[in-house]
Structure formats: structure tokens, C-alpha cells
Amino acid sequence: MNIDNLKSQMRKGMLEFSVLLLLRGGDAYASEIISRMKDARLIVMEGTLYPLLTRLKNDGLLTYRWEESPAGPPRKYYSITSLGHEFLRQLQDSWDEISHTVNHLRNLPYMPPELREDEEPQPPAYEE
Amino acid sequence: MNIDNLKSQMRKGMLEFSVLLLLRGGDAYASEIISRMKDARLIVMEGTLYPLLTRLKNDGLLTYRWEESPAGPPRKYYSITSLGHEFLRQLQDSWDEISHTVNHLRNLPYMPPELREDEEPQPPAYEE
DNA sequence: TATAGTACTTGGTATTGCATAGTACTATAT
DNA sequence: ATATAGTACTATGCAATACCAAGTACTATA
Image (cartoon, rainbow over all chains, first blue to last red):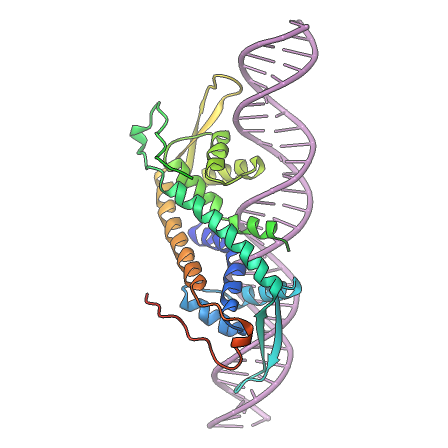
């Protein structure tokens, strides 16, 4: 196990989420999505994104239309469907939940090993 | 594809992260971890956590010691190693990166379909 | 005709979360 | 003594996805 692998695991599911978020702001074709993701510091491989878009399309969350390109082959412009919007809302809830958990755990006080002998560390004041 | 599946995908990698965060605050055995996770609104299955702990131990991020239980079989108390702390720091960086991306994408202005005909949506003022 | 650039496609691999069933130890009740 | 319940840990098989790598197809230019 190395850090790259874990990062890659962390991204599972996040990419669907990110793509839907991005397309909410306007239709785009795959290469465009990749470069916009890069702007948001998220590097996505072609071999990851293309199958992902196909999955989302097959599940009815996205549709696409062909458009001619000023240079090169035609482009598949993806846009989000109303079902996609619904899904996106649920994904946001999931994200908030995970985010909440991470923040909670992250705010637990760090207790160095020599201090945690026999006594349970006192949980911080934390209200739901 | 359903929402539960995506939620489950989203958790990939997060669980390692969460377990390390939790153990940073004090040693714990598996059942204890499960119940503390529940406090943080993260439901983890036994069949998920036990193999995960074994993986982390095999990779040198955790160690464990046996301790007798006041009732029931002895317990494996896991504690985080210095390598584990190192990993944890890197995981926090990864989390921050993903979190940054999601927030960035989430703050893109929503553009309803009828408004995004031929013109690229104006990206929001956004500084790195 | 050949080359470069853009865009999309297609296997194969590895990892991980989950469900399910099973093992082992202890204490209590009959 | 034996049976039962509770706690804790283990093992197996499945499904889903990120990544890598190689390949296809279309267009414009030299």
C-alpha cells in the first residue's frame, strides 16, 4: 500500500460527484472536462473519465449530443438530466455526511502515546 | 447504479483515513472503533473493519497488543505507529485536495439549461 | 501521401467495501 | 457439568471503480 493507491481509493465515487457538479454549470465534452478538472486540481485520466461518462449516461444521469469541432473529430457534449440533478442532490448529502465525519474525527484531540496509558482520552465538547 | 452504491464508493479510502484519525486519539479495539465511528455518523460493518485493520497492520501503519477483557474474549488493541502518523499526514493532504476540488466545483454558478446556449458560462472570481 | 493533433474506445489489473457465515472465549443459568 | 448468550475476531466470495496502456477515427497541414 502506498499513498498514491490510497489517494486513488479516496477518489472513488468522488469523480462521479465532481463530474455532475461540473456539468451543472454547463455542458462540456470529455477533454474539456479533463482540463477543467485540472483547473480544480483534480487530475483525471482519459481511461477513467470516458467509461465514467458512459456509465452516467447509461444510468440516465447524463445525455449527450454530437457537435462538430472547429478542428479535429466531432465532440460529444454531455449535459446533466433532471434525474442527474436529483442524484447530485443526494450525492451532496453524502458528501456532507462524510465531510462531517472527517471533521469530527480530525478535531479529536491528539493524544501522544506516552499520555494514553490506562485512561480513556476525554472526548472534546462536541454538539450535534 | 443507485445512491447506496455511490455512497459506498465514496467511502473507499475514507475508512482508512478515519481509522487512523480515530486511533491518533487513543488505542482502541475493533468493536470500540465501530461504536466510536457510529458516534461520528459513520456506520462500518465488521466485515469491512477487520480486514482493514489487518491491512493497515501488515503495512506497518498500526500495531496491536492483546489485552484481557472484563467480559468475553481478549481484545486486540490497535495503536498507530510513527509510519502511521506519516501516512496520516499525507492522507490529510489528499483529503484537503479533494475537499478543495469539491468546494471549488460546488461554488461554480449553477446555469439552467435554457441559459447556456452558445456562450461559455463566466467562471466565478476565484483565486488560488 | 504522410504527419501531427484532437477525441473517443476498449481490455486488463488491483484494490476495497460489503454480506454472510463461522470460530473462539467468557460468564451465567439450569 | 452442560447449555446458552454475549462479545470479539476470522474467512470467503462478490461487485464496483480508478488506472494503465494500446488502439481507432477524424481533420488539417506539410
